[in-house]
Image (cartoon, rainbow, N blue to C red; front, side, top):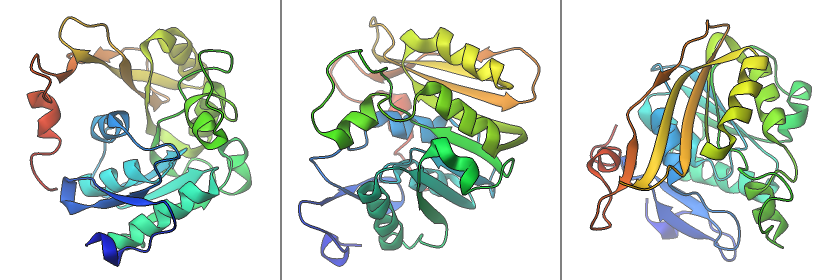
Length: 249
């Protein structure tokens, strides 16, 4: 669908997700999606036809990509009303309004508006940094996406525990330096970590992201996947990254 066919509000733009020719409405003055969202959508174990919930869904990019992979339906929970509205309009513009549902709400109060234990897969691309760690943007909408000024890691894990079915999965993208905290929180919630993958910006560099997936009620034992390299030495996307965009679903 052409950009002029999509209902935009002042300052908004339309970005091409490439996969399935999907388009996404974003605002450059607010938090915009990056590669971490794409990596999480590709990493999560997804059974065709399952129902998914995305915690802190933002503009809905992860939900759209999971629908492209074969999810039956995705529910997004987003505290920022403007972001939730963009996600709804993006879903409509892509003909997916009946499969991507957005809830404007606080994941910390998820028990008030969603039933427990109903989702086969829960995903989250949460704020990476605790308050007091690094520069906090004066733009409150950007700050809440990057720093734990609202929901923190414990809140995200608690919401995932409540929402996921027994033997269901919880997948998240985060920072390597918080791996110990992440695994402790997941284990304490009964979301046993089962898959882990480190993401490296380039060969020879330290990892700057991790992808982790836990299973509710599983026994201990984690599978560490091969390293995922984002860029080649000439600055282009690696073959592994390009595979994500190589064909429509």
